Image (cartoon, rainbow, N blue to C red; front, side):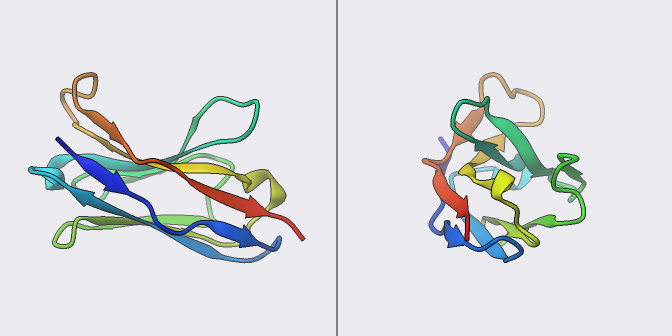
Length: 119
């Protein structure tokens, strides 16, 4: 079993920056693909960024060049650095851990944290 906790989030002005962190606990975490998803009101949950065990990254087109995902396997942490934030980035952000081979059986979610971009 994997548990994910995402403290952080909050209110930030357009153009500002915010860093989200996810603390993971469980066994075998280093092989999991870690990701950040978000869900805005009335919209489906979407992938924001992910990072595989070998540190290969994947980003949604809407955040490329603005967001950076990173992981620290020694500390079981995954971060999302968000720069040049826009009102459209407002959403609940969720941390996800997904087994690379058995993603249907082993996919875990954090409780989510609200990010609001507004002046």
